[in-house]
Every structure is written in structure tokens, then in C-alpha cells.
Length: 129
Image (cartoon, rainbow, N blue to C red; front, top):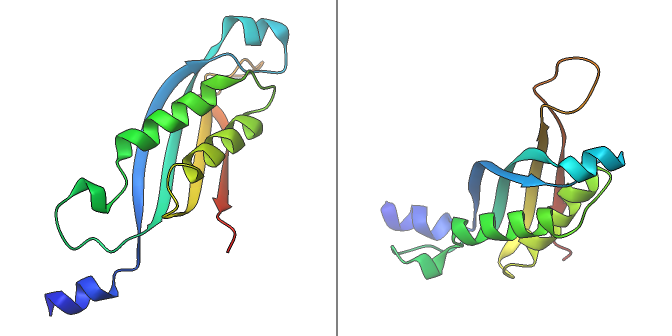
């Protein structure tokens, strides 16, 4: 019975939630200069044929988080949508086994004239083919 379950496994979703970082994004120059705190949640779909207990058979979530933060901090962007796209592309580029990635990027306590805990975007990128 267990063998049938493993043989049926073709993909899996790796979850990495609540990754926080600081970056300099925003529409206004003061917002870019001061910077903001952000939080990103990632769902990474990979081709998976995990039969054992070896990290090499999957994708290290530490590498996913590092790539996401590096991409999100690399360039100052006006829009969170652009930052989320940079992040998704970086995660897709990590490994050919990555089929797709969903990125939810939130700017914490955005500078608006009302109280908001967060503002952001959720997007999904899929690998071609």
C-alpha cells in the first residue's frame, strides 16, 4: 500500500510562510528612502519523486527563502506587484524541478491615510512547458 502512495507522488508544494525582510520600495521618494518592512508567503510546486529522507530529493526551503529575499531587495521598485514578480522569477530559476510558484507579498503598515495592517498582492507564475 505504501509503495502505491509513493509511486503516485508526482509533485508537491513546499510552503514557506511569514518570511520578513526590510526593503526600499514605494511610489514616493520619502517611502523609498525610509524603507518598509515586508512579509512574503511562498508556495513552490516541484516535481517530486521523494522516496527517501535526503534533502537532495527535494528543494531546500532555506534556499527558497534566501532567493526570495535577495530578489526582493535587489532593486528599488515602485510597486509591490513588481517586487512579487522579481521574487517569483528568482524562485523559478532556482531549480528545473520548480513547476510554479505563488507569491503573496505584503507591505506591513503601509503609509496610507487610514489604519491598515498590510497591503499587498498575490500572484502565481508557472514554468512554460
